[in-house]
Image 1 (tube, rainbow, N blue to C red):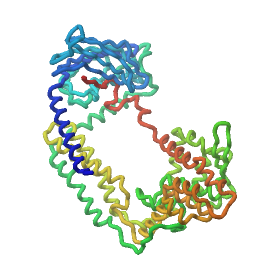
Image 2: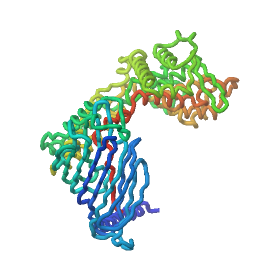
Image 3: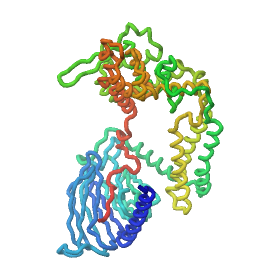
Length: 594
């Protein structure tokens, strides 16, 4: 089969199809000439909206649609649609958190002819609840007069906002460079904009005295002060879009040329030394280091610092050594997996193991930790932060006490890594600044620097995620250490190798499982354990604590619980979204034609 010929035919077909679509698109198009947005804020917090859009259709169309986004708790009621310049009807539906309005248009009253080369004005009238937010010190309306989801631009937008009072009113319009004129007359804000491109938003935020509202049952109430935070957000946003000057050629040059400096960094600091080791795989543990130490030294993202796999491997090792005993409590519908702490062996533990013992005991009761319920315990901010704090302390202990800076430096030289890390951070900051500068400028060279900034950002982000030993290098001793443990990992992952050389003792199997966890291949070891039993029968094989723990998905439950704790310690920004990030207001949405 001639794959090149087939690929050529496919590419040619796509080009021809694109050309056909382009020709078709040129024969059928529409634009929105102007829009009139009229908002009325009532004393009870209800927001009444009147929107009128004047469409200019070139070609034949079936109608238009409008999507009105709704945040949690918000609703649209009493929605009506009127049509001027055509005949039609409309349908309402709720789709993915939006009120979807579909308007069918005809050129004649009998609905037999589709609209063609004509102007049509569509007006929407509706009420919105829980859009106005009342904080303890101010009332706020954050509303997108134009949303990012429109599939065309708007040539001119006029807005009138009628407020319940006429004193102490503060309003913001973002982004400001779309403003043509704005003013406030009594209790009414009047706004006119110039062209707003497709994909951009235009947002109003108004701050009103609480005295303007009475019996505000249709407003959202937030029990916190909001005025200062909102004003600070607005000030930060305004300062972030300031222009620095016309430096786009220089920005483009820096963004494109600077990544090539990394080639020199690699050539000088990243090439690995040649070593006298040619092993294909390792059947036995290459060194007697603890699983946490092995995990840390092989952590190519941050050599010398353990990650969650090392933490979990240490727990597995403590189970293997009977520091933690496994109990399965059978229920009618489910079974609970319990870790029982043997405090009599506490003195045998190393300092990092004691830290884990103490950390888990924090969430235990009567020296017993219900692993099945650990995720729910860590699913709150206090427990999550406590876990993350103790976990970070454990990482420092392994890094500083169990390994030590001298051993890390004797294994790995990170000069090139430090240089690439600085490049990544500086490059990302420079790219972000360049991107913002270019994106908000109408200078003809801005697009060049915008593309160059995106290129630099991609390179900078990629550099941040590549392994440390790309731009750094192992010492000869460290290189042998790394290669041996990688070959041991390869042995654990390869079922055929284990089949050829299966361990004869459950003790060795357990070690495989512990270090397989540290190396991120515990599941492969567990599957091999089920396939290849020790030659010498041991009565407790199927009931060894480590095997039992894994068979009851203990490692999965631990991993899920720990990730839950990390997430709970860093709550989503949506939890404080009542203050509204710029561009995060209600309303907006978009629409199109069909």
